[in-house]
Image 1 (tube, rainbow, N blue to C red):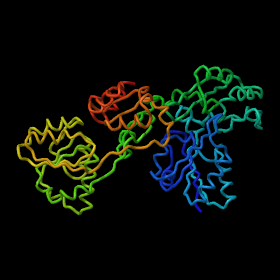
Image 2: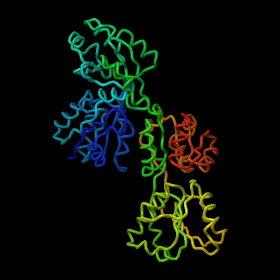
Image 3: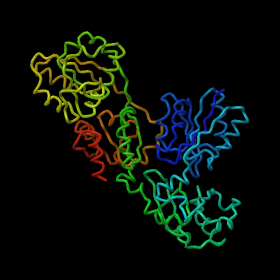
Image 4: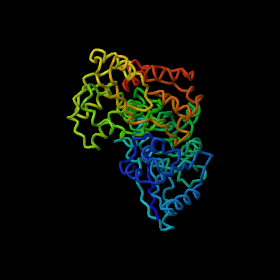
Length: 486
């Protein structure tokens, strides 16, 4: 018998998830998620984890609640460690209690991992505090989904004071406002609607209960939305920190491997963007190939690295083979600042560094160092261009190439995640080709496209994809281009 974790994934921002949720997701062998959980959450599961989409879209349920309950039981009985990923918190209008009772009935062990709930966090991101001294000393959360039928004490709600928050009630916005007015609430009471809070599609409309419906419709708001009523709304412009970020409203797709995405992802998130990661390439290490060159390492005059993966695969293999790097007497060279930093992290300062992330740049730089007969070792990707090795051989150097890793095509877990993307960043020709396979050429052409450099740009041009290119062929260069083009 397996075990089930009912996991609150937070309101949409991928970083609003608890450390415990991240740790337990890495242990799951099967996960079930719905649209409110956000696709970024799936990055925390293992590659061999089984992933099931449960739907739950307004008017279009891929699975009803009984089917979800049965599936949880079935997976647990098969011995799986199941993660049931739910938007917000499992017990705040998430029907987590029903799922827990279904598991209890079958004697299946479960745990609940609380999540940051949307009625507080989404309003926070909209500049609306749910409480404030001398303004609102309480807040009250209602489900608005069945406002016409639900037995809400509207008289009490209209007169209780504090902040009123309605979840899943956008379709019933007029009913909610009418009921409150009928029971004595002033029609000029501030009211706001926040759509898809904490995400790049966040949109806020502020008005009064007498006119909020018209304003929300005029702004084109759609579910999911949170309705908030009360005087705390008057702070929404002063405390609006999120929507003032430079990349707010942008959903940026990173197409790199999982290991390479972190730096760019975190910088984009800090600038207010929402990040969609589609790992169009995966790295397969083949560093065992270095073994046939171990005895020759001390003979090389230069060791050249063209990527961070090349650095990591090389030094990890030396550690595995218990090789003392003090035996290496040659000079180290690197393409680009990221590769330079990776070499420095191993306690070695490269003497030759190409500022631009292209082989031509490093070749130009090395012309001032190399001489005929120099021995050069290049541990690199099997998929990389042979330009550098060929150019050095033409200069009279003796070059050994070793394929220490290769890039293979990635996979797409959530095929809908690309729909909300505004900008796609390509960092190699391989990411271009693989993304065309994963999401389709026409879908990419609808987006803003940024290339990290001319080699990638050449591949984009081959497929007739319009693109912008960063002046500096680095993560910071791409982000600068993104900021300038906003």
